[in-house]
Length: 173
Image (cartoon, rainbow, N blue to C red; front, side):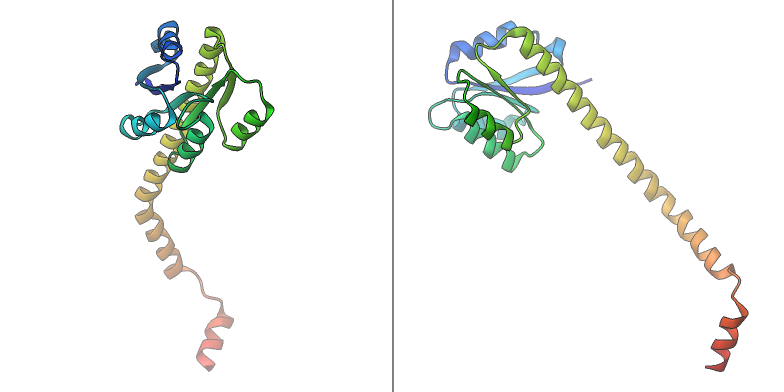
C-alpha cells in the first residue's frame, strides 16, 4: 500500500523539524512530502505536491491556518486538515468546525496524541478509497450488464401478452 502524503505548516522552523523527527511517519502510513512556514507558501506547495493531509499551525504571518483551511476547502474539499494551536480559544475551534477541519489539537503537540490522530486519519482515508473502489466496481458491472438488460427488456416487451381489451380498443380506433 502506498503511503499517504502530508505537509506540515508552521512559522516556527524548529516546531516543524521537531514534529518531522519525532513521528515514525511510515509506521502510521504517511510520508512528509513538504513543509511550509506560512499559509501562502503552503498553498503553493499543496498545489504542486497534492498531499492527502495538511497539518497546520493556526497562527502564522501572511496567512493563518484558518484562512489556509478555508482556501483548501474551496479547492480540495476532501483533503484532511489538522490544526494545532497554542491558543485554547473557543472562537478558533468554532471556525475550525465550520471549515470541517479533521482535528484540532493544542500545542505543545504530544507525539502519542498526534500518532493516534494520524492512525485515525489513515483509517478514514483507507475507507474512502475502499468506498470509491466499490462504487467504481458497481459502475463497471452496471455498464457490462447494460446490453443484457436491454435485450431482456426488449424481449419481454415484444413477447409480453397483450390484453384482449387493449387489442379491441386499438382496432376500433
